[in-house]
Length: 141
Image (cartoon, rainbow, N blue to C red; front, top):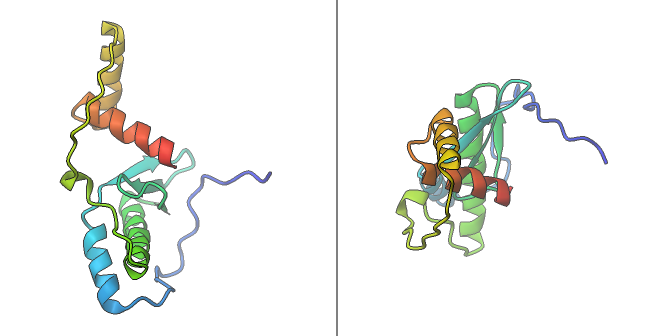
């Protein structure tokens, strides 16, 4: 089995959607995709790999964080446009979804401290967002 490179692809080409979508559908899709929360991961070789909480199977990459966000947004727009064309409802933005389920776990004090430190190190303000984002992203990828 061939090893998949984790290095961002050279992005010398101009980004373009090469699938012909109805312009109105593409505009609506881009508006929906702009509301999705993007998660970036720095790569060991440099550059970034990104996805979203709402569509974790859609990826983009780039040499810089801004370039990565741009490619992820473009990929999300295409994915949402396709869903709209075939009559599927795209996922709601994460901040519009109602979280009405709760999971309680028991931790030792040391485990709680380690989780808080890991969350803070990755820019999260609380353990819940850290666990939800990192765990669900890895499970869906």
